[in-house]
Length: 382
Image 1 (tube, rainbow, N blue to C red):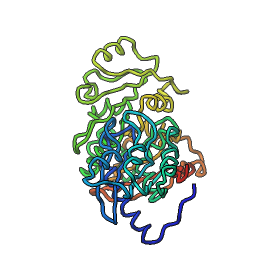
Image 2: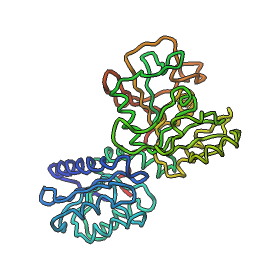
Image 3: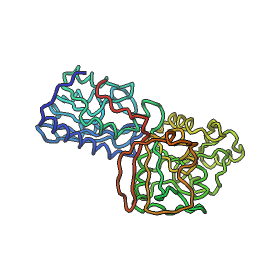
Image 4: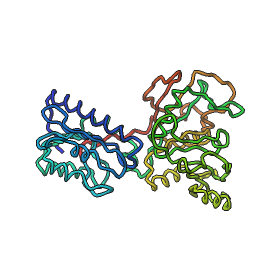
């Protein structure tokens, strides 16, 4: 696609209104998945005349909401949207027809939709209708906002975030198992925001037995994610809090060695039991679990531990992103966050690339990704 170069002042204005579209899109966080977060802004003569965002899965898309809230005609105006307008029927009709019918003169699009049902078709339809199209404004920011969606659409599997809190010397629990609380109150609020952002939260059975967590969103407003317990032999105590499915749905991933009688009892209580093939160590194969979740339209998962799950994920390089919260505490002996990775030499270590580093409460938050796995950026042309 040929994109007409913009004058400096036009480029600055486009960035400003695209930032507004992104801010609106974020309001749909935790409510629109597996759809992407999308915001739309309609501008005439440098002033916003209407705006909207995709509020909830199954409801109107951002462009439709913006056009519906405009108190004046949108004919001749510019539409800013962080993701290409859709061209297919899904839960709602395609957006592209309404955009064209509204008489929009120019469309500024942050990123091309990776969905094969769209993938540039919306842009071509706009151009065929005589609409001036600019693609790629704040492309990286637009991609990062919907990185889970991009990953899910392209690979059919959820975007995986691995998050854990540790002491300065890498411990996630004391020798006796006590882990409350290593991190600060501010870090725990972050954990609840992360749960809200993801479709599912995953822990191993060891964490359930040791901590009896609820795995719900309580410290911030938002929906509860699907709770996924990795429990090869179905050892979960039947009084565990995560089995209270009236609070949030729960899925337990087991192998075919799990008790049939216990499976039946828990299923009658509304707990979803998924039999997943085992790995070479007789445990639930995490890669197969992620593929299974992708088949259920789970586009993002948050792994919260414990040590066994953390180690397995890092060993197999399954997370797309690692979020490590480090508290200013030294424990000495205790449970290590990461177990044996069979590293015999320095050149065999798992290399990471650091991203964001921030203070949160009294803790440090470090974002990292695997150094040898590049993250594919947004496509700016179909």
